[in-house]
Amino acid sequence: MEALVSCGANGRSLFSGYVTNIQFNYGMVTNEDTCTISLEGYLSFLGRGYLDNFALTGGTTGAEANRIGTSLSGSAKTISNIGTSSLTDTSSYTGAAQNILTTLVSQEQGRLQEGSGQLYFFGRSYLQNPAASPYFFFDFKFTDTNPGTTGVAYNAVNFASSTDNYFTQTTITPASVAPQFAGNGSRNLQLSTYDPTTTQADNLAKYALNEFNSNTSVPQSISTKNSLDSAMDPIEMLLVGWQLPIIFRGTTYQTIIEGWTISANPEDIFYTFYVSGFEQNNYLKLDDAVFGRLDYNKLGY
Image (tube, rainbow, N blue to C red; front, side, top):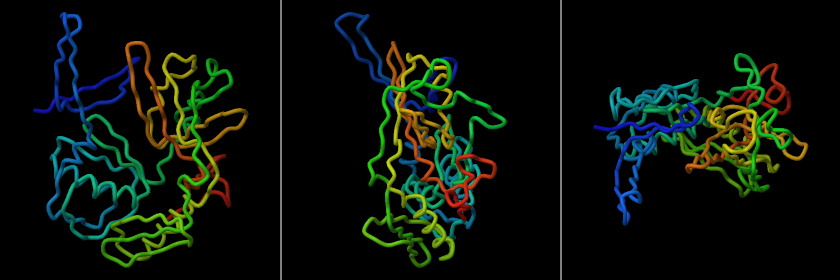
């Protein structure tokens, strides 16, 4: 029987995982004894899961991912489909469940977020603005100017180099139709997919190229800790696909949360958020100051 363990702080959950091992470490005296509990999340479970001749049905990437979770565990663990739109073919797959899942995410150009006993699969157009209705989280930003009054303080920000995530050509290789290409040059982004038609694969090639054809240096990660004086608790920001402004030396960089790592000791909690720049997100949202600009943002496909 699997035991689900949740760890949290300040009344909010940090993460959940299933116990895989418990190890006792004995010191010279009893108050030096420690216990190490090892956990794994749903992605690790999928990495060990095996599919034998799993047949896709031509549904959306998220719908097929949901079927993968059900086939492995019934209702014990699920993959929630949230707004995916790219269709698959009807080919069959044999191998590790995590491999086909990551291929489906790549085809969708979507995102994953691990939850308690489930995995959230967000479509490429899923994007949340914390400052807009119905949230109105105006402190949802990192800033180096008065973070104790508004926003969240940070102690390090890492910028991508001019060649990180920069490509001049994309090659899409579907499982059942001919490969499709966009752009040219030596920096070639190659993606394997289950696109059912060359038209959809061609659209993905152009879409992905428009995501990664900018060599502008933008924030790639940003770090903070609970003890810094901030108007908002960083634990409130553990949300994939949410817009995250980063104010650095007078310039505001518009980014999207892609993931995070957390570590802690009895004195403090340490967070590192991994982000992508708005240049790498081809959305067109009406009435949006960042993602609603013609000639900068695209409708996608």
